[in-house]
Image 1 (cartoon, one colour):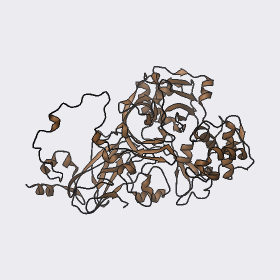
Image 2: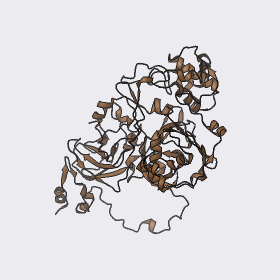
Image 3: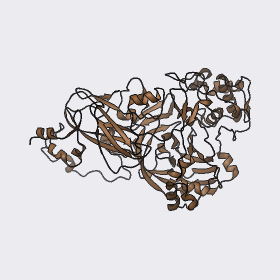
Image 4: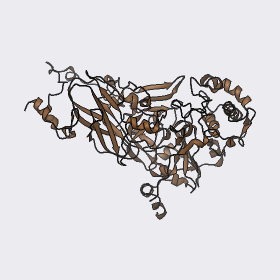
Length: 173
Length: 422
């Protein structure tokens, strides 16, 4: 308890007053692997597979264009391409190319949430490909660049350096 | 003393008819009986029909009076995506501090999933000694805590950042805030069971909806007061609030309170999800953006009278509204009836709870002339709700989140109340 007491008053109250009945069931590595599909900036959990802008254009035009417009121009839903140089304007245009700080986020989000009517329906190759297409349209990667678990985390987004964290760790008492 | 003399003798505490808050605290209004314009109708000549026939029987699950059916959330969906968007709490129709569960605001990113609690599980993994899976039945066995706390979408009130004041109700502008009695299991207890490794400074929370909503949360918050909420206002949380289980982070922006929670991954760094980078980040006038602006700042809004309502002639009114802060308790709320020239302190309904809506009240004698009502909240850290001009001076007009400026309502000659920029 001395160790716990050093970590903060609120935590002590919870830890001291409440002990769980220990009903968590150990998860196997296979179970964890099946559930864990989130991708951070280090790309550590990216799947096997690869894709290029050319392949992504076919995926995009079949499954994304109706909501996001020709070549990511937007309407009826989010604009995905363009807007670079507008962030100080009265009406900034926030797109993957102008705003998003990490390329891995594009893969992660497309895989978990797109296409809107059928999330989790794209293969890993299709997801890499549509990610490559959107990055190439924004001029972030070359048209013939291959996106995979090695290359995607290395992509440096144009607006990457313009983010600051407002979060500060609380001082420990 | 006549009624008029009684009114005139009341202590005016600020300009344009604001009266001392004790008027409504110690029966001071007794001297004013009959002074309101809404005098009761003459007594019916006969016994009312409800006294002559038996009423309806008991029922297993209650409903409000059908005569209240017009009190509704205002639903706004994204074009072509009915499950994406929000519905807003009709603040102007509610009293006290608890939001009825049926009127709690909604914000979804791909609809409300239909989840079977018998099948649903929560996985805790990542930088832990023991990855663990919890069934809903298991979670219900854990020690719980309950607290009355607000939840606010960080996009709330953003319409007031428009060049033209949106002409809407209080709920239409500010209704992405609600307040409930949330009960659930402290996340710290579950994390301790899994054994967080020293390098585990963050966690990723993921929902089981079709958006796979995911947000990064600091470990310090998770260990402080986060809960896995199972109950809302005494019953199991509603599907649109995350049934069967949601993450609840007192005071933090709504989007982080991940609904339909299925997975918690302990990480060394934030995962940098779409919603914490491209959406709920704050673009500043200099072109730089702030990530992780988590607590919702001190704020208040007068709900009565408020936008789109009409005064019922000159006379005595109770100005009333709600105040809240993600940083703790509300210390005081000040009200102005003269567009901010003078303010007086409002009465607060107690107990004043941390990170909860706090109801404030202020007697006002409206003389029928054009007026501007404002409320300004101060929280226990001393933070003061800014004016709209001050907020825009520091943050520009392009930001989307964490708008907390003072709301001004214009009361026109004739009594029409509307949104107004001072």
